[in-house]
Amino acid sequence: MSKKIFVFFPDGVGLRNFAFTQFKALGEQKGHQIVYWNNTVFSLKEELGYDEVKINNHSIHRLTSIYSRIRKHIELNVSQKKFKDDVYPTYKFPFSYTGLKNTLITFYTKLLIGLNSSEKGIVRIRKRINSLERSTEKYQYCKAQLQEHQPDLVFCTTQRATQSISALLAAQDLGIPTVAFVYSWDNVPKAMQVVETDYYFVWSALMKSEVLKYYPFIKESQVIVTGTPQFEPHYDSRLLQERDVFFAQNNLDTAKKYICYSGDDETTSPLDHYYLEDLAHAIRSLNTKGKNLGIIYRKCPVDTTNRYGAVLEANTDIITVLNPIWKPIGKQWNEILPTKEDLGLLYNVCAHSEFVTNVCSSTVFDFVAHEKPCIYFNYEQPQLKKGIRDIGQNYNYVHFRSMPSQEAAVFCTDKKELEYLVSQIIEGKLSNVLEGKKWYEIVAGTTPTQASDNIWKSIDAILRK
Image 1: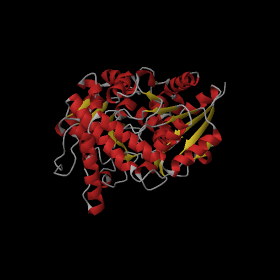
Image 2: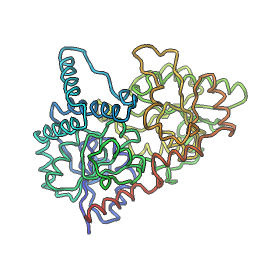
Image 3: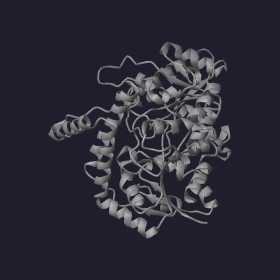
Image 4: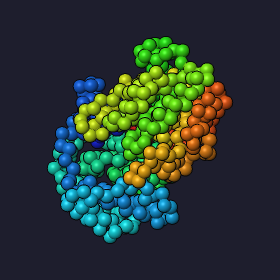
């Protein structure tokens, strides 16, 4: 029996997984009517011809952001105490004391954190957030849309957006089943779960255990392992371009072997440009010894800094820039949105590079899917000084404890070793692929090509209840 499914985009992060993959087509094959409930500035109707219901009221309660930060801090405090682990405070962003308004907000925030740092306190703050959002015009606006369009289920494409709270509350208050997809591999331990839904779809058994560990109010039956559509395009051979064609289109030299440098955002790796410079020096040295290597630099899609400029300009003979095909729709970082074309670009960067280098990103899995190694930079730069975040803490985060061993990536712990590691990989003497695949399976599940289908099967099972 055909059902109307609202695929809810509270922001643009879910576009890649649920608008540009086979997800929609699979749902329609099962007879469902797919309507995108769209809170973003990206028009799925105009760009892709998809049925959509636009949410034009974007006003969350003025206190929701403050209370969401309070909730996050409390959850991290509880985790620190409960699990006797000092990693959790490192997930917190510093408070602002710039100006009277920010100072007052900080004092208010810290007061409520202090008064509610317990599991009962988490419940109180969550109820407060829900109460605030139910009082908004946006809640009434979304409720009216749901009453007009009568969806059978709302599938929220990320669990981490405050913009989704009022809409999901409206659905629940109308008795419409709600599902949230846990968006990223590191989100659960970082207290990034903003919404409360009837069901949660997760990447793997590991992620399911994490959800149950950190959110004891969630029942096991509510958490369903589906995998993630994030990596499905890497198995679509239709995206592959012939090497000569791809190289000609992107001004690459067919005589060279290329290493991908995958850039990071400024928060994760504030001195990221110096790692690119180190790689360029290593490549230049190897080329004097008979190698013929180049670098493909693919920046972090939401990085709008110009910090790489000097390194790129000084190494135009070695580095070719292949920027992600993302579109800035607005001025905020979360208004720089992916495009379907970028799936093909990333596929071919992986396919035609020898390996990837970066600081702690999930691109290790993109490349492992193509049987390609990854070097993780894990040394600090001499430019590191007080006030600049070191990269070393990234590898202490909980999600890196999922590695089956330290061989799941090639860790470069000293820049003096970089040239040697590059040469060893190029010569086929060093690889993390075998162990990296084990890690990939732990994190992303056992069926990376079937995630979209698994999600629809799980939606069907919920609808039958």
